Length: 530
Image (cartoon, rainbow, N blue to C red; front, side, top):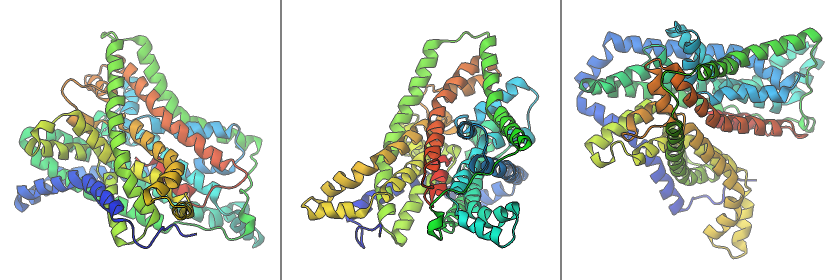
């Protein structure tokens, strides 16, 4: 059944989607203008500096190391959770996804609180691997569950052993999801600010923020921000290409059943539990235990419960405004992308996804320049901060809404039109009614992800408005680990909600008597995208 309502989308829908795409491009466009005003000579001189070259090398090396580590750890972990009969597999799946709820700067702070000497490149790589691992595990689990088991069975009939049959027949079906997840890890590492700052690693985000704070060198910050955007944009284009080629179709009716689980021996069961236990221990137990120990020890600065409550309320309030704006911008883009095809539609969707390639420090820097020079009254206001959240996390809302709209058969809307409903009335009574839970889920993801955003919040928040992230950061910068613990625990508690919902929802789909849809892996990738 076609997913199109007509050959040409309504003008009103196109106009609203174009407006949303242009809004998403504002930070990037202004940054380009800012760099162009600096002049070619200044830009080339900045790019040729030894520190710039060193920053590029450090950021690329850190990204490669973390991606390789996530693949080496994530693929066997995903196989255990998707294909092996592991004791309490559902519980392990939830636990493996929970590191998504721990911001990198919280994990870094927790490890430094235990080992004050931790610093440098390898410390940052270690912590970023732990918090990034779900970006590979979650989509690969979904891909393995939706893989066509008949291909592996054919390989067995041709004389392949169980291991070789899996590698040759099933692993290629999961590889696109692994590649897409790896690209998300790369984007996350390139955009990370908290971990590299706490471990004193001169990656892009830390150098850009330092240049921004040194008011005499903000041109350098803008140039470096554009280089970072170029690297991230290249990864986004590669990710889209991988996803575009990765759709797999089942080949026979025999595929309408899940692949059989692999039984583990006593030693294999013990090894699997030990493997999962070590990963969960390093990624979750150690950071949470560190925070609880610091909380129990107390600090010289007594906890102000009112201050903590205000920070939590501020985090939720500003993030809620940003989430509402993101959903409002996402709906027309998602409707257009889900129902129509064409070069113009693709261009609008790509522009709206520009936030996927804009790290928080870049959006923050762009909006600082923009408001100071063009809209001084908007500088350091809640509206500007909420706008930054909407631009940064708009792809999350678009992805969730687009998937929900695409799942609604267009024939329902067409039938409503034949019964005398107007175009809007038909859409409201069918597509909107059935797709709103997906749109709401996207808004919730934006809300709870925005609560963790640090660099943009540090740059754009109004004077005197503190969030959980900024309160935590202000205390860790002066090594007040005991005073920071309550804010870190509160932030983890808030952020744990979407990770838990995502993992349990995916398990329900995967545990059904019917296997997951062929594109479940790509839906999982959208849900965990940074």
